[in-house]
Length: 157
Image 1: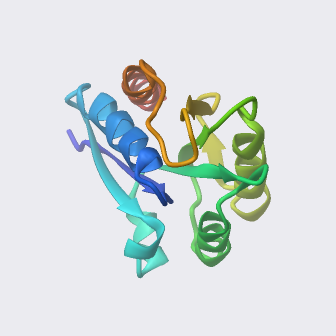
Image 2: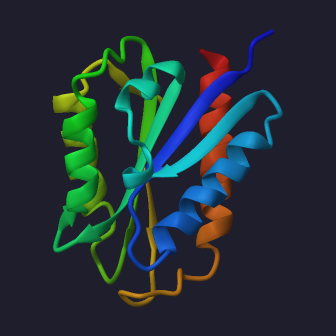
């Protein structure tokens, strides 16, 4: 049986969103049936490679109430790839009372530019104590659980 292949594409400036991406990937891999790669937006040089995955997760920090610009640019670049029948999910990191603000706009951008990517789960927001971090206690465990839930959804399809 072929394993389900997933990739997490993230943008991170201070490393907090990368930590969340890695924790989500760990949770996905714990299923034992889903492979998961993790890459920063600038590390994916050929967006055509996305066609080789069953699911794509997108994650970035909240920058002034918006998803990080590099993530939006990546989505724009990747929108030309045929991603028919792909599953997806999104996550963000935030400070203060900004939970889910960038996440909602990120999901909207994905839905508009990549309508073939179908969300399998409600997005995830991880709180960061200050702009540079650290992540609030318990957020990496929550991210790991989100990854396990993503894997369950992928395997249930």
